[in-house]
Amino acid sequence: MFSLEARTALYDIIRMRRDVRAEFAGEQVAEDVLMRVLAAAHQAPSVGNTQPWDFVVVQDPQRLSEFAEHVAGCRKAFADSLPEERRSTFDPIKVEGIAESGTGIVVTYDPLRGGKHILGRHTIDESGLFSAVLAIQNLWLAATAEGLGVGWVSFYEEEYLADFIGATDPVRPIAWLCVGPVTRLQEVPDLERFGWRSGRALEEAVHRDTFG
Image 1 (cartoon, rainbow, N blue to C red):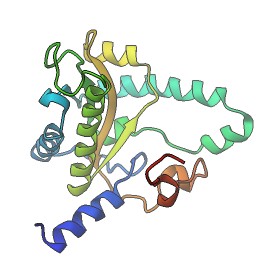
Image 2 (image 1 turned 90 degrees about the horizontal axis):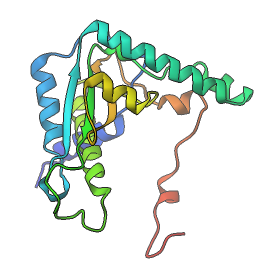
Image 3 (image 1 turned 135 degrees about the vertical axis):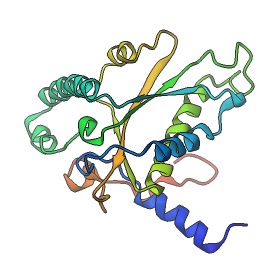
Image 4 (image 1 turned 60 degrees about the vertical axis):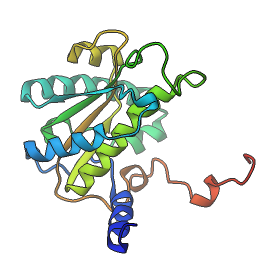
């Protein structure tokens, strides 16, 4: 049994976790801290104990700038697709901190890891992908505990990112995570602060016995 202090700390970390964009301090994460965070990610549960993830760490400033330029183009394409009212809400929202964070971690998923007969994927193939996402959650919470911020970048073309890191089919890049020291963590998530979308109350998400 964990102590009350340990349980409180865990729940505080979960509550404080944020998708960071504008709060990176401009310093690169220390190597020992980076490896602790990656170790936490690597300890995530995985279907059939396949550990279908890999972590590509990108810290070269030129490569960070190159990927940031690609993301900026994708962001503009999304903004141009929005109705005027939604675009005015979206425009002030910063969607990435690629250069500012100093470290990008690309999480990949290999559906062939573990071979053809994977315990737990016989009827639900997506459980392999779910496993890699659990590694991301572990990474995110560990980073928060270390005083780091994490920003999940989703404005990119998957084929471009796969080529950028040299991943070949069937390996997929499923996330670019900006990781680095922060000046602070926002009390209220950005998308709520900027009026894009509010969160749901827990009571709306909990069902008993049947859905609805």
